Length: 61
Image (tube, rainbow, N blue to C red; front, side, top):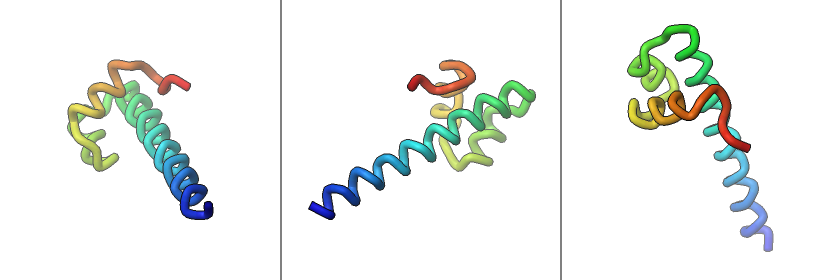
């Protein structure tokens, strides 16, 4: 049972990290930072950052 709980907690933490990166990407884009630079700073792909920015300022909850 503990293994299942640990996996659920780990997925929650990962989802939180992704959400924070998404919000950061949108904020940096609004400030005029190039997508390539945002991707490099967040250690994510340019295509993923472009997707986040096109979705808007905050991820859907």
